[in-house]
Image (cartoon, rainbow over all chains, first blue to last red; front, top):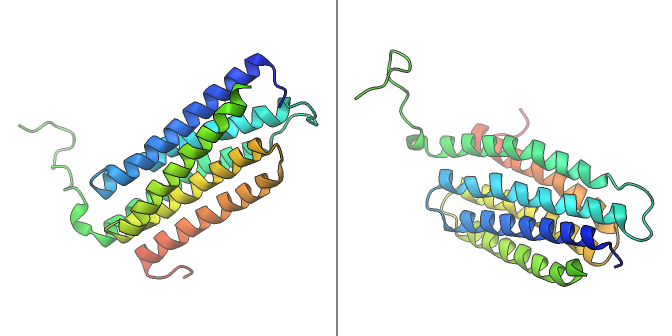
Length: 117
Length: 90
């Protein structure tokens, strides 16, 4: 691996940030107490971590010694993951509400938006 | 050369994340927790494949990662729809 110093530093930062975010997201999945709390970890932190790793891969395969032009494959996965993560989170919440209807919060009071005491 | 020394640690972090997901998959009290654990599992394994591709300096793992991304999403949607509707294709 022969990389310029600046690229090396950028790749290292992206890898550290990506691994840290994914690990924190999975830790939240394992640690938090309620399904709706647990949903926060994977849908936000893990998606960002995977995005960082994919950007690092894109930079690496574009600037490595015998690269054949710009490597845009990874953009495909990045787009796909960023598009599908909210959709699957929404479907999961719907499934959880079907399984446990008591978890649905009560509807807001009549009168629309006025604050109650 | 920072990346070369850093990559094993990043791979280790993703392996630890996979183990945490496996814990939630095996333990998770509800069905939705298990589906969520599977969802996170495929996203983390995708990132792990990309990292292994950088480590061994090949692009062969990329196609595997793309297939995992597509099929994992389809699997999550199918499982969720099965829970909501009791049927996948209506």
